[in-house]
Length: 338
Image (cartoon, rainbow, N blue to C red; front, side):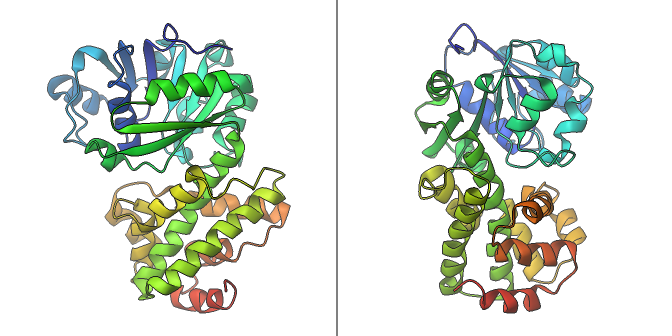
């Protein structure tokens, strides 16, 4: 399995949100990338991009070199255009976006997931989903994780990415592909652990936001986040995955930035819940996808099978899906996390 410059001269990006837009910006820093094939879903967004050279909905301050980008409103055309595909849609919409594409289309492709959520129809991380549903060998699959907010990429602030795959060759080449003047990269073989960590940290970021909305202070939030990493470690152990790396940046670092950053949509979603917004009204006001909303339900379902001790997950599930009062739910949580 080789990912070389020949293989990555033309890259397909599936998704047009803020993270997908940031990935396009990063990749265009690499002069070996000659063409980006970018699925933007909506025809009017494609037309706007072709006219003005930037995404009208996300990171709109970033101006792109249109000569190196082909925009699509049909996902199969975009995927067919390259043997190297990066998935960057919300997890809740991945299956409906690509399920109609024949498995034969994926033959020989390398797939990189930048999605931080489970595929709800199968309760699977994206690497497992692509392997099982699209018959892609695990050696041809990788994931990208942070800590790395799209808004800071847009401002070219130094950020960090970890590339994970069963194939060391793939991760090394992927790291070289993304490494640039404002991105530092590292590699890992723990693809499943890093994918699950990226999912869990969104749930914990919602919890951090709820605590802020309820008026808890920094002292409580420090305890909440420190317990979150222990809860993550416990979950990974119960899943039979390595848990000795949770203090590294792709686990703890990504959790910290998502729980504390002003750019964190999951934290902001939780903050609104803590201030008294209903789930629906918070979603409508944000007008963006908070992955942790979907992940809370999916991880809760998964944890019913594996039985990890996860009081923060249980608390967030009770608030988001059982209409529990955030104040009451956190009073219960107070006694469980110290």
